[in-house]
Every structure is written in C-alpha cells, then in structure tokens.
Length: 149
Image (cartoon, rainbow, N blue to C red; front, side):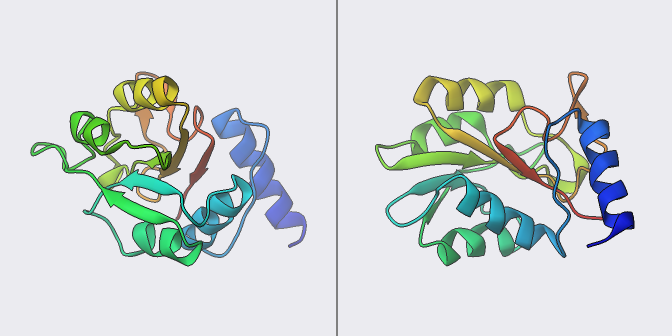
C-alpha cells in the first residue's frame, strides 16, 4: 500500500466510474472481501457457474455460504439466465456471474433477476478487465466486482 497503489485505485475508480476501488493481491482475495463486506455467510446461497476457476466456489465455502450451480449457455459458456432463475430459492442472497474469457454474461437478464428477487450481484470479472456490455463496463452496475490482471 503506497502511492502507486493509490494511483491504481484512483485510475480504476475513474475507469469504471464507481465510488470505491480497493487493490488486493488477487481476484480470490477481492471476491472474499466482497462477500464479507456484503454480509454473505452461513445459510446464504449464491447462484454461480460451475465452469470457472475453483476460486468462484471456494470463496463461497470459505465464508460458509453455499454455491448453487446454474447451467451455462452452450454458445458463450456463461451463466444461462433461465438456469439461474430456476436456481433462485428462499436462501439465495446473490448471483455471481463469471465473464468467461472476457465475454460478458447477459447482464441485462441477470440484473433483472437480481432486481426482481432483491439479490446482490457480485461479478467475477477476472477475465474481463476492459470488457463492456451494451456500452457499460463490467463491474460498474453491480454490488461488487473483482478483477485480475
């Protein structure tokens, strides 16, 4: 933590047009902090993809939440919004999309689901640092997002 880190955080805030950006040592640490900061823990379920690096599910288990795996779209390999909808239950607290290989998930459909059910959105955008979806940067419209580079 020093002047270079502060400049990086400021540049990230500006790039995404968000109020906060915190630099940590890995995307794993970023997702872990986001989960803790958003109060996700024991008894909570988070709908996410089974097709990702182990971090996506492991950090959920680490905070004693339960990962609920939804199927992916055959063409993008990203979360299928219809499959996510089928996985939402009374203990669901968040949706965690992973923008696989820099290809954005269908964020309009996922955001509509999150809004309809009062869920948090936590983006694993490790692969999508400069990706956009309908002109919006990944991570800019979510409760939290984690990047890696």
